[in-house]
Length: 257
Image (cartoon, rainbow, N blue to C red; front, top):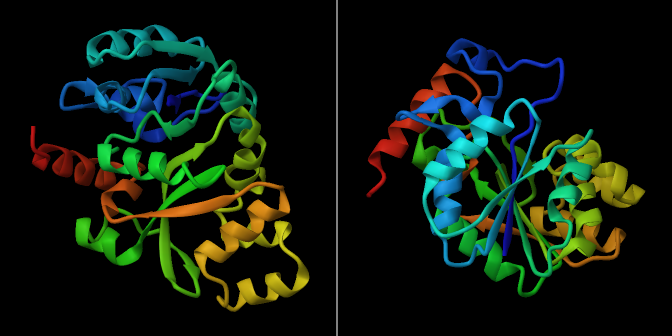
């Protein structure tokens, strides 16, 4: 698989936590004396399913990210690709020339686990597009305050894990629609844009399951799309502030090895 790591910084924007740490790009915030993205690249570089890594980033961040990549270890070659104006076009640029499945994640996904990569890869054997989610009870079990943003469906509340996959470049348009166009899965209030009137009403009263919604959206754009529900709730943790930074560092410290 080719892993695509999104690590761009939009011009004219600044992340408050990055500013506090004195870096321009959130992915370069230090944790345990290593930039966040170095942890991500180390996990990907050691994984036997990953054959190459393309990092989508801006020109200003590229030197520091290249340095982090050189320290991350593993036997997987890392290539930097210039980020584009949008998430979807950045993914497309980083996917150019790929012959097999694609794994997409973010450069600050410090807790990315090998088991999560395996789950997406295995599910891609039967689907064109896979989006990783986890249940609220799994998140709470990992840490009660690690992630507070959940999306309600008929079969429960879920959190987004910032990890998805596509079976080759042809599935990228659907992946972009599911994760970027209106941010449908990450903002369920927008999912209705891709559903018929009846399903929009069902969604409004939480009468559709997560799987049903993803399946329906996939069929709408001509692909087989499915969620994969990860048992590890920490896969949904995002570093947004001092609290979530501290929680992530704590869990990272507790990991074996």
